[in-house]
Amino acid sequence: MADYFRRVGDFLFHTRNLLFPVFLILFLYFFPPVALNSPGSYFLLYFGLISILIGQSIRMLTIGLAYIIRGGRKRRIYAKNLVTEGVFAHCRNPMYLGNIMLVIGFLSVSGNITGLLLGIILFLAIYRLIVHSEECFLSEQFSESYILYCAQVPRWLPNFQGLQETIANYKYCFDWPGVAIKEYGTLMTSLMTPLLLIGWKLQLLGLWDDYKMLIIGFAIIILTAYVSIRYLKKSKKMMSKRDRKYRGKNIAK
Image (tube, rainbow, N blue to C red; front, side, top):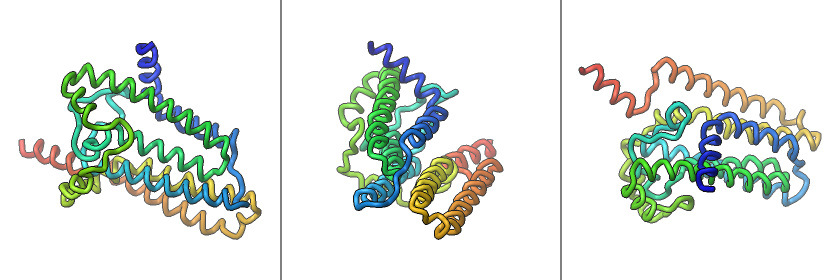
């Protein structure tokens, strides 16, 4: 059974960039957003926006403090080194935790209770299977070092003890360029998805015409930022601190 779960986790890891957006779109299709017509609907909206903010912040903090090879190698689970610094010293899966918070945020902004509950169950199951596969790989790759790491650091809920000190140690070397070029796609999704959902909810109330120019304006700003950062990344005019350092060493040689 463990081997079966690992194969499923490997498949989900390999196809997650395609499957996850499809799952989210399907959920919003079958469980569409509801109008802002009750105190509960406003609570879900605000809760969702806060959840998105927390999830995106976790991802940005993780990337900015410690470099990780995202996406494995050739879309398969891979790790050259066991990363235990930065946020990884407090949580073994901070990026996935951030993703779960984002999904909960999107579905909460939508306001459909059934979609929110089913979505939480589905995505928690998906990420648990992926984490199971990664843990199997890391156990084989790093053996006792990884077992010791697992004993000291929780899988999901972060251990906040010492987190402030961890952040302070990176105060002057936080990799903002790295965050921008590695996270610009997720950032756009984190901003555009709730914006579109709010527009949808306003349409349900018949208020779209009153706010459409504001929403379209925000959308243009987000897309312009996305295109600009993508250009800077592809043209190598913006590079992470690690990549700049590595490039400098190669030039020196």
